Image 1: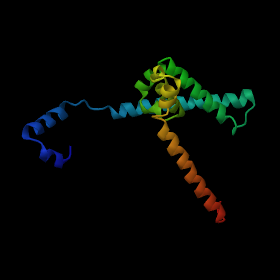
Image 2: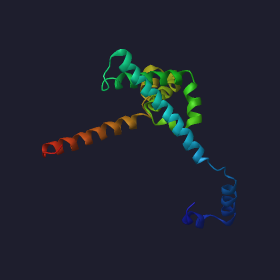
Image 3: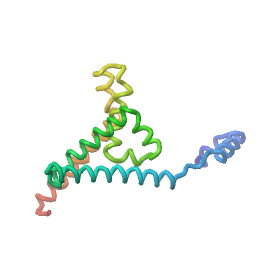
Length: 159
C-alpha cells in the first residue's frame, strides 16, 4: 500500500494491514512460470506436429499448412472447453494456456456456453465477444498500423 494511503488509515487499520500482509499466502511465481512454460510449449509442440502432419500427409506447403493447423487447434480447444477439460488444464497451467490461440478459442467458447440460456442472438451472439472483442479490435488496429508503416517504407524506396 502506498504511503499516502497509509497516512489516511487509523492506527488500528494500519496494524490490520500489516497483520493481513503477513498472513497473505505467497504466490509461487517460479512454479507458476514453469507450469505456464511447459503447458504453452506442449501446446505449441502439438501445433507443430499438426503442421508437420498436414505437410506430410495432406500435401500442404509450409506456408499453407498454418491455416488448417490453427483451425484444428481452435476446434480441439472449443471441444475441450465444452467438455469442461480445458478449464482443468488452464487451472494447472495458468497463462501457458491463455497465450496460444487455444486460449482465445477457450475465451469465446466459455462465454458462449455461459450465456446460452439467454438465447442464441442476445445470449450467445451478444456475449461471446465480450472478453475477446478487445483482442480482435486491437489486433485489427495493430495490423492496420503495421500495414501503413510497411506501405510508407515501400513508397520511400525501402524494403
